[in-house]
Length: 479
Image (cartoon, rainbow, N blue to C red; front, top):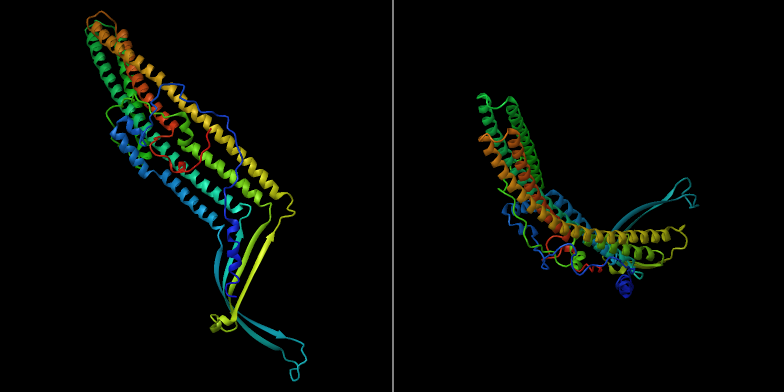
């Protein structure tokens, strides 16, 4: 008799043992090509620390510091911790729940109007005390996979959060790399503007000497002094840009934005090797695609959960304990009490609420599937765009290098001709401006090429040597 309340639960415990949760069959129209269309790439994959390909020790340190101190990553990690507890809550729903209870009640009851002899005008009362100790069990059989579907949805949501964290880390590394390159370019632009200012000042001194000697008119001097003012304004503009990029870099790294971060002397060269892997690997690599696929899985599981609510539910409630009006008898086996109740509940009429829940979850799953396919297309577009830009930027860099060499040579020749009295100041100033613009444009295209390489690694999902946490066992369907 002692275990009569427990054994019925154990007898049907395995009725709710889960098999695979059924999932709707979905067809995606996006087909991965055998190779990338927009440029020749290395079939080998990049390392996890993809930024190491730039060979910039300062960049390595800046990204390492950002990954350690960035507050956005800590927020994403906290969301994962919350999702992990939600999976525990969902898993607990499929297991028997035990609770231990103790109660003690005291009651006084009055007997009014009873014709007892000698009690006329008096109220007869009695006081009762009852004490109980119980062990209770509650369990629901998961016949229709409702609980199992909830567990699957919670697990998929956890994996989606983990993929979001991997995506946040990847995005942060890309932001730090771009801020690093932008700050270095701005520093070089400051140096270039200051060098141009010195060149303008030298030319102005020569013009001033010729003006005082009566050789050149005041127009030449005014033009030369105007270029000095323009160069000074350009220096201030470049310094402001450098300061903004340095503070942005410090903020991303979790530092106070004091504008004191030490930069490298020059931009690194973009590596010739482009490790891109195969197009078919992209859906398994990009954290946002993994997150979208996990969201789709969770939405499919919610459909099963909603459909199960339309069917009967089977639950068992059982209790075993003791009850007595004496506290000392709580552990006495002779005052044992027990009960068990089997509940079968079948929804009959709820004004279409449950069916509407099924339709709503099916619509959300269709939305998740469309979003997933849209993200796949966007991912391929981003990779192909970055690969196409790689060749274009390389050609621009080569053209600007040639233009810079010619502009510097023309500037030197114009200055020599002016000193020899064979040219006017307008030609000199024009040549100096052309040289400055060419050098500045070359710096900009060098940085743009590095930024594009960062965008390419970002589009590819970062490094390939190890999968993000959500990729392991994700079962991502092939596009």
